[in-house]
Image 1 (cartoon, one colour):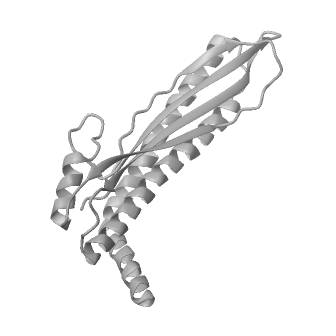
Image 2: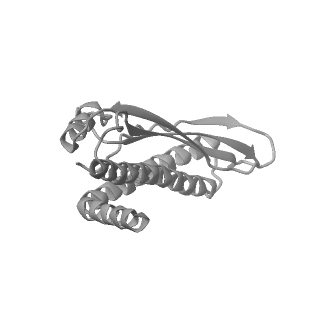
Image 3: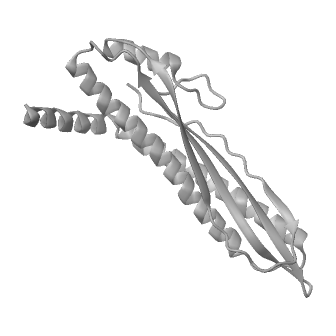
Amino acid sequence: MPSASRYMRLVLAFSMTLALCSQAAAEVIATKTYSYFDIRGKTAGQLDDELSRRGPTASGSSARHPGATKIRFSGEASYIQKNGRCRLASAKVVVHTQIILPRWRNRRGASKELSMVWDALSSDIKRHEERHAEIARTMARRMEQRIRSLPAQRSCEVMQELVSEESSRGIEEHDRVQAQFDRVEAVNFERRMMRLLSNRINASARRN
């Protein structure tokens, strides 16, 4: 079966608010939700077909994937104009992730071997998508830190431009890191699955 991929929609909106207030602390806010799509089958081939037919699609592509992570960035920044200089008063980056996973509906009656293969595959899909969400949180924190470290400027309009530029760079870096992760995962998929299956077989033998 193919390795899990990702579906990513990235939106970044920084709103500007001129504020005459003390500097507020900034923090990354992360939310994560789960949703599922159902598949049915009693053989490996049937499950593979179901994943290919029912799995989520990637943006701009009709290809289906065994799992996906939707990621959306948003945020806001406020500024203080004082003594002819504008500095950042507060900044907040928010990252929303939705993890989409398969759910095998008619597992009852399937062979022990198929159940073991499914357990290995589904756990790897979940681990893969959870890692995408973790990467998004890490990159959001990095983006926020860089925004907060921007020096004061002659006007808040210029400051806002710098915040927007830093946000765009952060999104581009995020995309590169996520794409690199997918490339590494694809190369190691078969080796990873064989290790997972071996571990589960050994654990089952010990129990028996």
